[in-house]
Image 1 (cartoon, chains in turn purple, blue, red):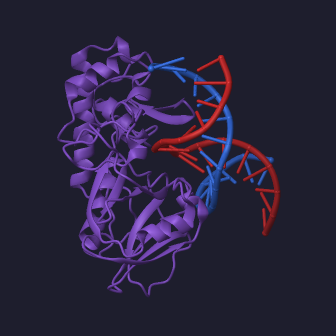
Image 2 (cartoon, rainbow, N blue to C red):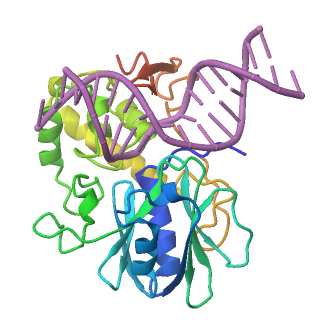
Length: 290
DNA sequence: AGTATCCCCTGAGCGC
DNA sequence: TGCGCTCAGGGGATAC
């Protein structure tokens, strides 16, 4: 089985759409917690989580960056982060449990379950209340625990000029800044490298050494590269993932630099190099991104 | 307050 | 065959 890349914004959005399609309007009548680590961010613990979810109807879904959530008719929000290896699967109630099933949500209609499956348990779900006050965007409820997460480039309220300013106030390497979810959300290691390649920028350049137009262009590339992935249906799910129409999702990836060490740069043919940065791999073209 | 570092976790891949 | 090491990395916590 091919390794699934870590879910970033496009993959999370694909999951949100699938979950929205399958679960809005349905009433939860069973919640089974199979691994405590999956709900570690729920303040009240497992019993409280179950008590508050039972009988609730899923009214809507929303997303910011790599977090998404189900809006319940109780006004509470069931927040999901897929972490490194998480999936939220839509599965027939009778189907065999996955090896890494962490939480099962069953519905009163006995239709398909939502299953939170996560091999490495970096992901999780928790119930939260909407943040009060002006930080809520456009009247859309925002979970209080993720109020520190910045708008992502697809949010109608995303302001490229303001984010450009915020980026240019930082002295850290540009890659660290666009990975910082409190500056701009949704970008992970893969799309950071792809965006920097499109913008012809070296990841190590201090953010405050870049002109505003360069930063603005980089943010545009980040949105473009994620939009391309979204159009292709996301890139993170292998044949185990059952998506919106019940068919398996398997998406071909066309990445210019990420994971392409030694292969020719699609722009100039120079072999792509891999470097270590903050304990992670970074890929770049040594000629295009000096 | 911004920045750097550590830690959480499991399974694949690889050298010996 | 098996053992131990490295790697994958989001993001919260912590120290400076």
